[in-house]
Every structure is written in structure tokens, then in C-alpha cells.
Image (cartoon, rainbow, N blue to C red):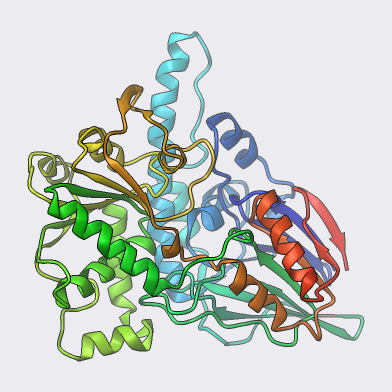
Length: 464
């Protein structure tokens, strides 16, 4: 068996791993590398393999850093099944079409600049139509069901507790009469997250490929993070300000809506306008509602007790149109705005930041990991001035970072995850994490007597 670490290797974005076994090539994830524009095109355009030769793609969840290059893969000749859970298939469909729209829009903007410089126009990485073509290959699979991916390769999806439908992927690979189990973690969730079940831990596996995004950080208990979230909201509203939250459209937005629902239902804050201003987030929330039977027991109890539905309550407004979005900026009373993108790089959140960032009554709340060189990272690092749409703005609004709301496992959960198969695991590979995070986690794992830990470079091959 050969493992090719083609993406999210010594970085967090662009997850992509190729497994060669029994004469088959199985791709785990096909994510977009996210970063500077020049790197974006050079990293994402070309694959380390021939897409036509891939026998199947297994997708852990719908986030763009895991799924976002699938339309380009299909565009370049991949036509095999894409296996994922039903919620992941539904969410990936809308997210990839949204991403295709962004690719097309970005190229229009870039080509205007290139034309002024006398340069040749660029083509989008892929289009909405490419994304629609890719969606036809999605094949839904239930949690825990075994299915044959290729002769001698049997797969199962287990609940990863990260977003709706997210999975860890187990491959049982039989070669030359010997079976070995490889477990790919995808993105690992946390215990006690709202809406979601706790992650299933790997059992009796031989090889583990595990994410380490927060390998150097201990998250506070989600209840503590919720309490800080509540206090920041109350403090901002008391001074007559707005809370502006850049949030990923899928996963984080729905958790925040449920948090606010609980706060209002419990009387922690009075009912105030809450705007979810992102067409993608609105569409994703509709899918969450469709699969509400997959919510965790606590959320289903909240619903069954006769309170509001988890993702609906009075004064909650789901905003689709541009006209509705613009009208929000004409309202000066306290409110909460949740808008994409989560790293404040594109989308409607930029307009809300531009209109509110210089008002000291307001709060910009950072609720997730922010990649280097993004506006979200610059805000999280408390820079005094930032550029939005090319214009320089003073950051007079309070910037509050709520790290404990992350949907990624922290260091303690990652250690627990790895220790679950300590007695059978032969090798552990860390992916989807920056160097400091991986190094810190390695040290902690070694203290717990887990040896043979790898941190592969991009395009590195390991034979096992």
C-alpha cells in the first residue's frame, strides 16, 4: 500500500490523500488550497496524479478545504463514484456551486486588471456548470455501512462530529491475503458541541491519518465558550452596538444560530434582530433542517420540549437577496449579523465590516481559525488598521476572539483520539496542521508512548 500526501501536508488547507492498493487508486478528499492568489492557482490547477486513473473518491465532509477542488478534478477527466454521507452530498452540492460562482466572479475581476496591463486573460479554475457536473457523481452512504470501493478495499464512514454529515473514513485493505485497517480522521469534532453527536473514536486500527489543526491548543469546554459568547453579546448590546460575526456558512453559522436561540429562549438576552446574511448559509440551514433527525439528543430534547425549532425563532432573519442585505446597513439599532466568509476574505461580510468597523460601540467576533494572510487573521491579531476593498479603515470596533467555539478537536481531544487505538496502531501520520501545531502534538503523543509519528511533506509518498 502506498499513501501519497498531496494536500493539507504541513499546512491546513487543500486536503488530498491518494491511496494505492490492490492495483486501485483511491482518493481521500479533494480540497481547495486557500491562500494568496498566485499560490491558489498554481497549487489547485494541477494534480499530482492523472484524474482519469482514480477509481473512487471518498469525501469526509463538505467544507471547501476538503471538497472544493472536486469540480476541477471532474473537469480534468475523473468520472468515478464520489462516496459521502447523504448530508455531505447535499451540502457539497450547494457549496461547490457557490465556489464555482466565486471562481467565475474572481476571474472577471482579475482579468480587468490584466487587460489594463496588456496581459492574457485567465480562466476560472472551474465554473458553476463544472460543479453541477461533479454533483452527478455523488453516491450517498449511511454511517457505519460497509461498502466495497474496489476489489479488496472495503470502506465505512463513522460520525466525526465536526459538521452535519462529517465522517471519519475507515478502509479495510486486503492485499496478498493480509488485511489492514487504515483510518482517516477527516476533521475531528469535539464532545458536547451543539447540534452534533460526539465523534466516534477509531478502534483496533493499524494506521491512522489524523488532522492536527489545533495540536498546540487546548480548547476550553464548549459551555465556557458559550458563556463568553453570551457575555460579549450582552456587553455589546448594552452599549447600543452591533455584533458582526464572520462565520463559515456551513457548520459554524448553524451552531451560532442555535446558541442565540438558547440565549433568547432562556431569557439571557431580550429578543433582538439576528441576520444570517449569506445565501449559502441560508441554503445550508435548509439542509440542516432536512436532516434534523441526525441532531444530537440534547438538541432534539430542546425541540421536543415545545421551544422554538433549533434553527428558527422570532426576529431571526435569513437574508438571500442583495437588496435585503443592503437594507441591513440602514438600520442603526443593536443587532447581530452573521455573514460569510468565515475568514472575512470574500462575500457580504466585507460590506458589514466596512460599514461597522470604525464604530467603537460595535464588536467584531472571531469564532474560528483564521488562515495566514487573511483579513480575519489580521483582525484576530488586533491590527489597528486593515484594508477592505482596497480602502484603509481604523479598527475602532472591539475585536473579540472566542477560541472555544471551534468545531475542531483541541490538543486534549486529539491525544484521546490517537490513544484509542494505541495497542494496535503501527504508524500515525499528522496532516491538516501547521508546523507548530504538529510539533506540539507530537511531543504530547510521545509522552503518552505513541511512537512512529510522521508529519509528511506535500507530495511525499509513504509505503506501508
